[in-house]
Length: 138
Image (cartoon, rainbow, N blue to C red; front, top):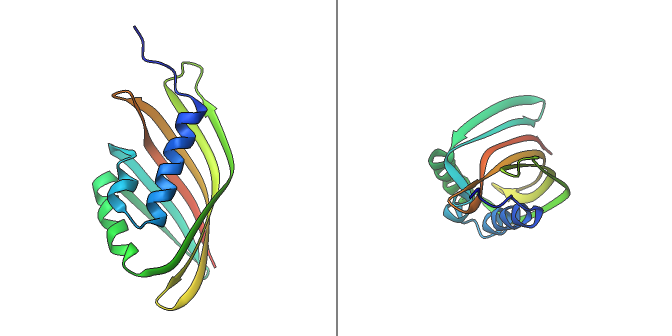
């Protein structure tokens, strides 16, 4: 018997879980939604400079833990969410815009990310296998 197909509601639940964990600054709860070999990449543009990051889940967790300590007044809004389920129902692709507002070292900033996430069913749970963000920080 083949596993059940991924539903849009399951994908949305994973996104909601990640977003809530970010607001709580809970790195373990964020990364609980990722496979152990998930690849998390970002292209970040800030003050005319472009940098790229690449992590796997456990490395990403440590990076989040370190970063959360420096942020205050953090808020997150996810919008323009589109979810596409693969014809075989085994994977899903989600594209959305994430707007994060925060204070970093006393300076108010806003990061707008175009996020592309790939999810798959693993042990009867929908999890992120790949996450790429194009981030613009103002």
